[in-house]
Image (cartoon, rainbow, N blue to C red; front, side, top):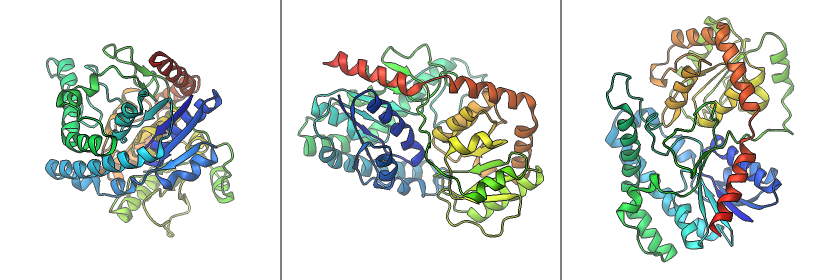
Length: 419
């Protein structure tokens, strides 16, 4: 089969799709991965075909999400503008990028891919890293959970998912329909089709573990929880200074926020440095997209730009991060406790999962982060034997899964059934 995977987002979002593409390639299929040019190297290094689209994820992630989150109307306006831009770019560029294929697999931030699959008359398979299908078991990942005392909780959770999806597509439907006509020469879809997109019977695969989010009983047979799609860094060589620092004492604490950009970087760094000191730990500080390396760090903290999580995390005492789906998965597999500092999006959902699974303390929202509460969270994660044991057990369960292989089988079956 010839398969195109459309993956839009940060590097942490992209890597699982590269892993999925490698699994499909090993199964004998031709695979093209379509993403931002910034990540071309990682795709080509893994010997997958590549085609670029110009929707730069930094335009979203470098925005001050915490500022926008204070005003729901400002956030909604910004979100609508960004997604309209992505949608138009997706339509024009995907039409050029996708040739003759047997299936199109797409991530949540690639709304045009579903319509392109219709245009190509091939299956469109949703491949997502966080729950988007309505369920009564829990609420939408971008909204706070309901308190336990709320009556009819399952019905309300289901409704919140439905309205979440309806609002998203209401903001985009005019743009999507215009592009369907202008770019693909397809008729516009009725509002009912968009409003019911989240309960349609097209195949969906979820790249997370049943041990973390068990498949809800109210999800249909077309929805599959496969296990995580991990991309391992077999050829990565760590710098000597990093290796020496790790070996020079007890396992350090990792702190990094990946693609999340904090406008108050100096203040955030100061909080981290003081909290690691107060908790009497050694630390590795990953700057990610947060600018230049600090030069005035104490000896107990080693700065890095980034390092592969599969190499670094198993050597840590605990991992402190923003709670992105990919980073959270890497922490779980490493078998070490996690401390989550969510900024926005689905990150509070994964932070709540850490506490629910008892592999770390309750999450601390970025706006509420202080030296004292971060130091206390690090102390808990590094001292609580129950937390450490739970993290080890969860890590072993996840290591025993092979999410990529299961996802490949489901994709093959889905395409076979459609032909």
